[in-house]
Image 1: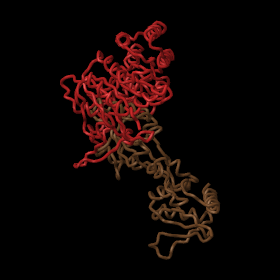
Image 2: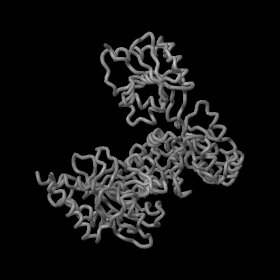
Image 3: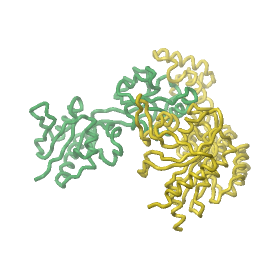
Length: 235
Length: 363
């Protein structure tokens, strides 16, 4: 007998709805359990697919750990939460929803800051002028550190922020922010602006395949079929 | 079995004691802030972090220099030597290893040769396959001053010194010249005219209009001053001649006996002068006694804010991590708020020293 493959999908909200739509469009309509409290589903057209509904942030971890063969979640969650994600996760197809860019936001009044290069120069002045490093409010600690390092910026401190990050500069708890934005309107409302090369990641819901799971030939072929169908449906 | 292990450690400790007196210990747990504020946020991932009982962040000591600086009474110079375990996540997976070294806190440039000599003394007495590499940030600083590089660019180049990629990027941008196209025309005119006072007023008005605390974050006058700097000194592209001299200098290298001649020849060829920085470096070379082959690399430095002046490393042939590394860090005590005083020191990893001694026995 063949073993089924497991696919992790977001368990609630707009991401769940959009994921279900994409699967249906790809000819992989998901049957939801009759009990709405259950977190399992099936694909009636393909008997060997188990659908597991998980929290969006857990899906990246489960794909990386090989607990599911495939998963749908935001690219930002893989980049932020999974060390060495490129070794563990293959990003198979962008799915065209859940768009969110991870960007740097600096106060509009920083007229002299138009690029990461400017930001590096300003960060270098903080200690001498204010006796402290530049403070960056974000929940994207790892993405921020990587991006800043790429631009040769090391003189800053992360202030971990779990909500209302855009308000941190006005509240005085940070100088700049790194956060996700879809339209930029929250940033503008808080008098923050984006800068050239300050976009760290253009994130959207993405079909991810585990590189760490062991799959039989039949499972591998089924995984390839699902990847192919979703790529066609969204491509 | 590493029969040499204990011996190497005992020997190192004895040599350090002979030069610097009793060894100093520092607490295993150190304030995380001191590291992140000086080495940068990126260093956090290499540290073992925990919390104190009041929630303050602590880390296992990743080295001795900063703990010694923090414990130092800044009012008078003092020398410290140490030997103990340090903890950091390394690329080779060894999270804990023994480190030894010395710091001369408050010591001026005359101490450079003592530190270098003390470091070299720790090497095995038999012939080893290694070389001493010397660099000096003061020489680069002197060259930039002589070339009339604007202070703000000079400061950034000095911070990036030792990181070829960052230096190239900064220089490339300086060659482009800077336009402030996104700045409102009225503000552009003020910036070009060097009117940082009016510019600061305009910025303060904008900030007040946003309902933000004017004094929070950066001060308007600092934003204005940087705008003036960009609109005046950075508007003109750096001439290709200056760039060629800087590139030429950074790629300069010379074996021990020819360092001074090479640098003097560079001065003549490009009509520049390293001034007192070269006299000082030359004095160090004359006093230094080394059995190792030695070499000067003009571009050798450490891309951190608090390093200055002399930098040196003992590199084993065929290995990418240095056995001994040291140099001058005149800005660290000030950055930590301890004292406005210079300092110089070195450190060595005992396991690397042991490996080197082992190789010598086999050879």
